[in-house]
Length: 195
Image 1 (cartoon, helix red, strand yellow):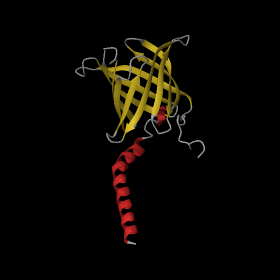
Image 2: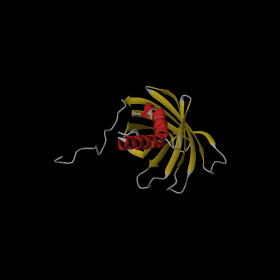
Image 3: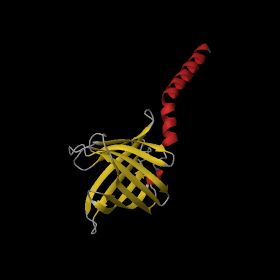
Image 4: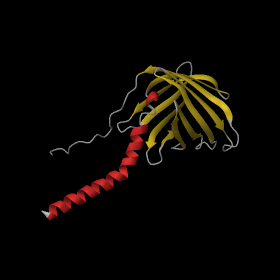
C-alpha cells in the first residue's frame, strides 16, 4: 500500500514539474496564435515604392497543422510574369513572447530574419532584407486597417543600420480573393503496419 502511494506521489510530482516547464510557453502560444489569422487566404495587392514604382501581385498564406503560418508573396507583370517571389514562415516563440519570421528567396538561403508583435489593432514587424545579396536593409513594417476583405501595409526602411530611416518607403494595399485555409500535416502520426 505504501509503495503504491509513493508511486502515485512521484508520478504526480513529475507531472506537475513537466507541466510547469511547458505551460507558460503553451499559454503564450495559445494567447497569440491567432494574431496572423487575417493574413490567411489569397490576396491581390498593389505595391508602391520609389525604386520600382507601382506594381501588383498575389499573396497567399496558409496555417500549417501545428499553427505556423507559411506565405508566398509574388509581384507580377501585366502578362502575369513573375518579377519577384519570396516565401516566409511565421512562428510564435512562446519563450521569447514574440512572432519570429524568416524569409527565403530561391537560392539565397534563410537570411531575412524578423520579429513581430501585435500592438492594438496592428501587427508590427522589424525585419532585415537583402542579407544574402550583401545589401541588407532594415524594415519597420506595420499591418493596419485590417478587415476581413482587405488590409494595408506600410514600411519605413533603413540602409545604414538604423541610423536614418526613409519613412513610408513601401506601401501595400491588399484585397481578399480567396478564403482562409489550413494545410494538413505532411507526415501525420499513424500506426506501424501490422500493429
